[in-house]
Length: 89
Image (tube, one colour):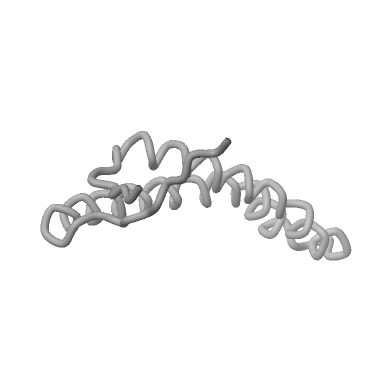
């Protein structure tokens, strides 16, 4: 059976994806910190590495909200994304 996504809840979708983006960014913090370990005078890299998950989550929230808003407008005129569901036995 075909289904179509007619509307995204902008705030809820943005909130969930912001948390997901932040969690993904936390995985990369150790890799961002490695270059700064051998460099004593590079404290800005440490600050950036620790701030990155928050910045990534904030930007993820903002852009997801923007894309959901645009999608909801476009879906009214051209229809939503279609997908097929299948019952699992």
